[in-house]
Each structure stands twice: as structure tokens, then as C-alpha cells.
Length: 319
Ligand code: VAH
Image (cartoon, rainbow, N blue to C red; front, side, top):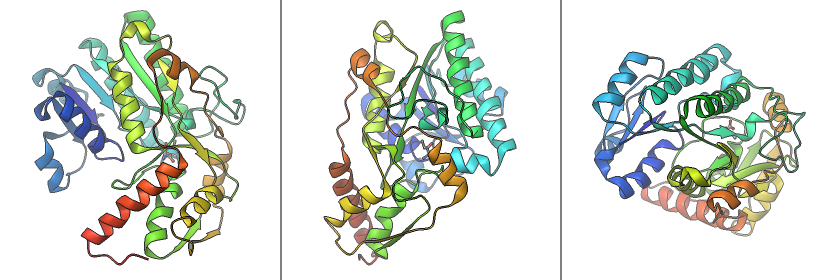
């Protein structure tokens, strides 16, 4: 059975849907520290679980015979900078609870890392799997710590720790929750509603990005890969890198009237400028056959199509 923490964030519900198709609805349990919308309860088991409550998490894992744990609970980049104390608690103490429980119960543990695990002194274009990592956010620092702790427990005690460094994830039906790459989701909603997007990054800010279905497929394929194929425990995965100007241009092929104005926000611009421009994900491609399906063209047409349908179903006007 699979337990997903932080299940009500950008990624949990979609990942649960895919895993439930493969392993059965009742074998995938979503959890989070807030009440889910009704459709989440209808789609399969949900439990309240706080990663800071070690005893309750332990009870959940044992009583539900959990064998895989996907740990999505975390405060992401800009959100974390606005609440460093909470980010340190959730991203580090919460992580340690999960690591200890995974070791004690021999779980296969997936913890995501991020482009944010690199800093200004890392190679940026492209950034390899193994290089200097001196991130400048509490999010990045906690994610590097997660990579190091997971690999330490793997090498010392055989913990089946698996970690993918995600790019910015672009989704139509769920909100991103980090703040730095989130413009690349908002621009699609703005294009179909107001026709104008105000971007908090400079037009030339290039960042690695990925369509949410590629992100989910990479996670499942990686979790299912035989251990003997993994030469690393932490891998970069990539699909594309684009700037606000480039994604705006691609959207204009469908909606020529799209206006984009720029008012860079210094906090998020500084974070974005410290992150890699492109990922080198050749190890993931070689070891476990990673290959993205969505490039910028496919991403833009899928996002516009999905959001257009959503707005029509909700009776909202379309620009
Ligand atoms: C953020 N979307 O902006 C998240 C993600 C890699 C970026 O972590 O923080």
C-alpha cells in the first residue's frame, strides 16, 4: 500500500489517481493536514496526517500495511522564505520523521527534490546530477539535506530511498504552491480570462519546466524501476526550459491578443536567478529510460485546451 503525504498540494491527487489505476483504489492513501474537497473523498481513501506527529504517522503506516511512502509535504521556495521557521520544521523535522519510519518499516521512500536544490555557485546550463549545491533558500537547503540524509541511510542501512529533482511543474487542474515557477501556470489562466498576464519575473528568465503528467509518469516509472538499474539515488529529470517571453509567444499562436507586462519581484527574481537554466538528465535517461512526452508546444496546447474546457464547465467566460 502507498501513503502520500502533503497529498492536497499540486501533485498528490493526480499521482494518487495514476497509482490507484495501477494498484487499486484502496491501496493508495492520500493524507494532508487540511480537509479535502468532497471529490477527493469520493475518489479514494484520505486520512488526516501531520508529518510532525511521529506517533500518529507510525500508527498509520503499521495499521495500513504501508510499503511505499511518497513524501510531498514541504513548504516550497518563495513560500518557505516567508516562513522560514515553519519551513525548517516541516521540511527537515517532518522529513526526519518520515526517514526514521521508512527505515524502521523497510518502506520504499520517494522524496522529491528540485531545481531549487542548486544555487548560484552550481553549474547552471546545464546542471549535472553531481555538483556543488549551495542553495540560497530554506527550501533548497532542506531539499539538499533530504538528498544527503536519504543517501546516507541508503548506503549505511539499505533504505530504499529514491529522489527526483523536479523542474517547475505546470498543471491545469491544481494550483502550484511555491511561488517562483508559479507564473508559468497563472499565465494560462490569465490568457483565457483577462487576456493579460503581469509577470513577476524578467522576460529573459529561463527555468526548467515540466508538464504535470510527465512529472507523475517519471515518479511512477522511477518508483517501479528495479534497484539494480539505479546508479544514483537522486536524479535530475527534465522536459524543457523556457522564459516568460517564450511561453507567451507560444500562447499567442493560439491567442494572438495575449498581453504580458513585467514587474519583477526582487525576492522571486533573486531565487529564479540562483537556479539552473537547464537540467542534464542523461543519467535518468540511461539508467531507467526516462523520456518526456511534452515539449513547449504540447504543453501550451494541452494547458489551453484543459483550462478552456474547465471554464466552459464552470460557466466562466473565455477570452
Ligand atoms: C516553486 N513550483 O516555485 C515550485 C517548485 C521547482 C519549483 O519547487 O517553488
